[in-house]
Image (cartoon, rainbow, N blue to C red; front, side):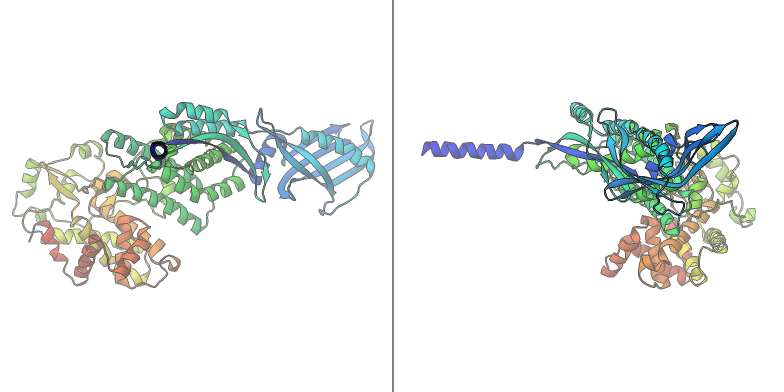
Amino acid sequence: MIKKIQALLAISTLFIVFQTTAWATMQTVSLPITVDYLMLRKLLVAGSFTEEGESATLVDEGDGCIQLRLATPHLSEQEGTLRVELSVFSQTGVPLGGACYSPVKLQGYVVLYQRPVINPVDWKLSFETVRTELLNVHRKSTRVAGVVWKFAEPYIAAYLSGIKIDLMPPVKNIKDFVSPLFSADKEQQVKAMLASMRPGTIELEPSALYLPVLVDVASVYDPHERRSNIISDKKRLKQTVALWEQWDDLLVHLITRLAGRSLSEDEKEVLVGVLLESRYRFVSELSDESIRHDIVRKQFIEAWRQLAPLFRKYFLQQGESKGILGYLGFFSSVDALMTLDKLGPTFGVEISTAGLVRLVEMLQVNPSFFYYGSQPNANLQELFHIHPLEKQEEIPIEEDSFQDNGGVLKRMFNTLTVSTAYAATNTKQTSMRKILQWKVPEADVTDYIQRVRDVLKASTAATLIKGNVPEQQQAMFQKLIQAMAWQESCFRQFVVKNRKLTYLLSYNRSSVGLMQVNERVWRGLYDLNRLRWDIYYNAAAGSEIAALYLKRYGLRKEVTNRKLDDETMARLIYAMYNGGPSQRTKFFKRFSSKKLYESDELFWKKYQMVSAGDVGKVSLCLVGR
């Protein structure tokens, strides 16, 4: 009986150990190098068909009497082999005294069915010919005189068998990129993994050649690991924010490189959506202190799933052969990240600054471009159909209209100073006097409210003139902009803090001015400095952003799947203005279930008051009466 109890105790103890111990498991993972046939063709051309017209001269003797040229390779998969079709021109004759006697010509196409082979030592890709086929100029099977083919075949076979594509650079790129994905405590594990890299069996698919790069990885799985990865440490949060800013720079770079291509409107929508969703999500998590240390990795993977098809399409079809191995390394490295990410969070894959820099280098871009600047990006503006905003003509204001019985302006100059950050960098923009015009009066705000309304009307009119709002929505849009400014800032561009007049900044320090334009979301699309200090520019930007959401998401039936009345449309646009394109579905869900956010309800009340002509009630939030 005692022995049975001891045995049960031993089993129980072993079970507890099993349940509380992190187990390491070894597994072989495939990190595929995907070589699209268009990419493979460019590699062939860049290495072996470098003469004019993507050609290669194999033989040229007797002043051209004896010639053999191959040109314009085309690749595809056929019955498990790589089909390589080349145009061929061959001539054999007898060169004598500067003339060519009895020339026999061959002109058409040669097709080689090949088996790709990878050398496991130097990672060089070569091709073994399985069979050959000749086609005439009309690409029909043909037979030729034996003497012509007997002359040409050995040269063609020798030339093509000598072609080797060095895949060591993309393999090295994978190693260089993967290495910093892991924390320092996994150094030995990573070294062992990278040392185990070896080529697998090449697979030919209809669109691409797949070379599996096999690695042995030891992943650790802890069934009881419940640690939250929400960042609470200020130093680590600062590092994560800096890393995200570098990722945002890289994302803008990728998007603008694509934006210069001949994209369809749907493809442009993908680019716009990827950037906006990435930024809105970051701002949201940063604001509610739910940001996680792996946000960059997650955003990178989510973005690449959408961008990869466009990159492969446009940079393979339209790109130059120069630097193609860099693109292959970039694609392969990101594919490796996505594969490793599937192993689970406890595997410890993260993206670091070093990893981002390596990706940029693969694209042959100087890593110094990582600069989280505030100036507009012309390519980004073009993609969003946002035109550079010039300062609008200010509505003439008589000086005594804001002196309030005299002396107010003088006292403002004597008791208030404008933030030194503005004074030091904005001498060519709005003057201090004009900024002080927009200080909220302490007593009667009737005139101030009307002047702000005039600014909003002017910005709305400018947006309507550009044709960004259909005629049937224009009345709604004019009310929308006033209601948004009321909800967002209570008609304020500036506030007084510590006896200094400065721009209105949101509680989470991300949105500024009259329309509370989010600086992180709209960086590169608007001049951030002018958003802060120029009420006209801020109003124009807010109006243009609202029009963008109306046109791109509100009016597209495939997006809303319904025809909206003006009031619902206004509420939808405001929800997206605050939360990004994803709010188009989230808002309808809230609207249908009658579980609206407080911000939804507050905006709706203000929109109704604007519709009823009660804009004067803005004074309640300005001065409390």
